[in-house]
Image 1 (tube, rainbow, N blue to C red):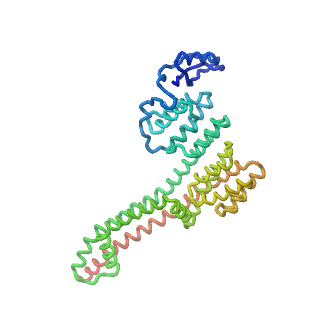
Image 2: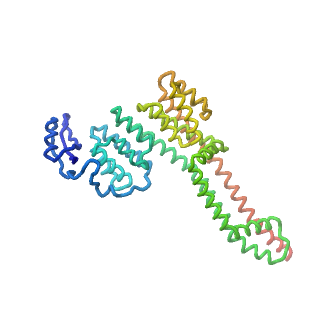
Image 3: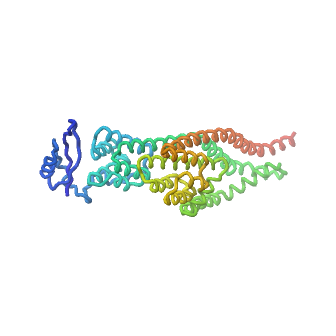
Length: 409
């Protein structure tokens, strides 16, 4: 049946746009009048749309590229604001698409608008775009639609996404300078050993003199790199893609995630990041009215660590058999003690959602401080390490020159 867009006046005197299924525009007007709606206009430009076989506009044919997490968070907040202002869902989605334009996220929201206009729920429409909307996003929207508090859930979801983006930006900023030093320093060293040192070492070898030990070591390393750099590059690339393919398997991902939890210096940060994601996701889902078992399923996937997810399978089974949440979290042996103590307090007071969100806030702040402290330690260490390597290269080159100079004198 064709779908028609109409404009009506609400009891509060505001104009509101929505859609209706009807055989024709006249039939749409009759249905609306019979329902007591004060109709201002029924549009004929959607008469060719059929439910399930709609004629899609040009933007719907564009394939969305990678989507920006910050844009998704901002669009979510804008949609919540439109709904809170009294706009119906379909017009709100249309207004959001109009604002986003033909950017990738605008294409996605255009498609979501079409599906909702055809009668699908917002959660169903969002689930068709997994690159843009995670399980957490879709299930929170579904819970909001079921409870009738969609705008409140969207605002809470926008807060979660914005905090995640903010933390990721802070982590990148803290690690950007050490990574820059490592890349530049490593590139300079490889260039010297592969292209500069071989030409100089050839001169030294033609002198038929016994070279100092540092110079001989440098010539050996340089000769190896000059001869086998291509092979090392091939092995490195093959190892990268091979490990990447293996880590994509369930067994490889589990082993790698367990290894990350035990890494010196970085293991504690990985644990706190995963726990913070799990706690925030579970807290938001429970606060939005999602069933606890479904919330645990989603939260373990969002945590981003297969070892943690494997441990949470036992937690879910214990909860499914009627147990509480705190004791299974303690028994699984992955979570720090403060997590299950806070959850136990929340269960006793009936505020487990708030307890989980407080845990997430505390661990997010702890992760930020830990990364900043680690970066402040790495930066002063890398400079003397890189300087020492370059200094060794310079010393190994200059020693034979000094010896030749002494011999001439």
